[in-house]
Length: 537
Ligand code: NAD
Image 1 (cartoon, rainbow, N blue to C red):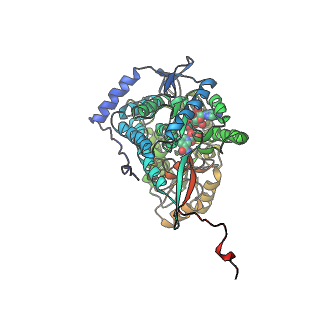
Image 2: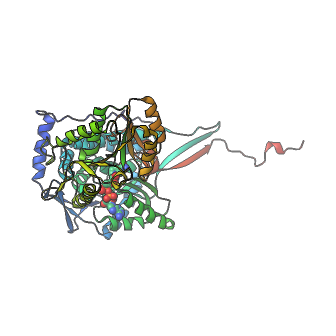
Image 3: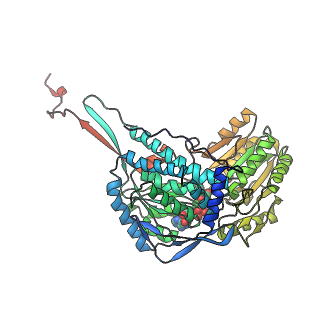
């Protein structure tokens, strides 16, 4: 069996002053900011312009239009189902190594000629800084496309044993029907991974990108086409989420859902699939990575500076719009004044603004809906808790929310429980002696279980936190911030209301996109229907 090139994690470029990558990225940002592109649907390799369009704007300058994208109607969704079915006949029967080669080539193109374009699209359209774009739309997506072929190979290699005279094999078939990929705005890499992971395993896909990440989504599709992805394997269907989803979830050909986004949306899709169960040819594979309310807990033996940096980076990078962002923090009272002051000082040094200015630490939040929702949380904090730093919102030019640190005396306060998805960290200072109790509180405070960190020097405390919080996070960190998982190193996903925990970018995820067929071959079948023991004594 062929072996794919051993995957290695793509190093992040540093974008230091004077570097070539910095000059190139700045030039690309300038050029792309002057463009206003037209984004069609792509179904069966055919571009479709419906004439009904919506705009993609820069979140940090929301009057600046970057693109107009065409909105699909129900008829286009039906066309996409037909195109996916058509393409499946060939794609499902390609040798797996030919499919893998498409994505390995996509990784190579992204490493080289496409890197600045996808980074610039992510910066302009999703308001990421250069380094946040680099770790997402370059390194993470390259890693997904390098590591998944390697995991697929491992999977295909797993075969049963055979006793003498027989040969047992597992045929890792793609699912019968199409996979529906629904992607969130906050990671370009997830936009690229959700449609391609099932495609790698031989499935054809209908991809509905997030309306607020349409620019990067469009370039991902173009890049895949440049890498040789055949027409109809991934069908690009932007439009009204509810309308598109309703049509697809009624189709007997729905074979799987690959979703990342909020818990409420995933719950509604799960419900619909449940109601429609009798319609489907097979039981659809439903995979969803959803919300989080990620914690940092410090023991009194924690290093104050390391803890403060983890809160600042984990809480505020990309405006707190990572599913893994630290948003509830538990610090012993003995350390709190020092931690609070250090975090607040760092926050005062965080420049917020246009991401094309490389001194910027925070861009804008994604859209007006998000801006309004976070503003409501700030109003609540100003009324019912103590705002230590930040606390204001300014939406006239861009959707800017100041990085905000809130202190509460109530560990069950709303801001300690609900996902805010913005640059707001709420802290509770607990009595030092209540360490075991605070761990239980953390475990029971929110319905989510995505990421969490413990900071401590005392090994016994680390052991205790790791034990009590075993089910409170799918990705658990010791003396590290709860963000920044790397493909191949920390497979990512959470349990409880944070999703099905199928760990994107791992073999566990790929397993969901195949339906195994067991084949037993007998080389010398019996020729007599009786058994030897039946002979007369
Ligand atoms: P969202 O739920 O608003 O949207 C996600 C996708 O679902 C988008 O494509 C959207 O158009 C679509 N959608 C919206 N309403 C729908 C409906 N009624 N039916 C079907 N599809 C619908 O999420 P978002 O704002 O794009 O992303 C933020 C959320 O994603 C947060 O909750 C975050 O925690 C979560 N997230 C989780 C992970 C993870 O790995 N667990 C990673 C990234 C983001």
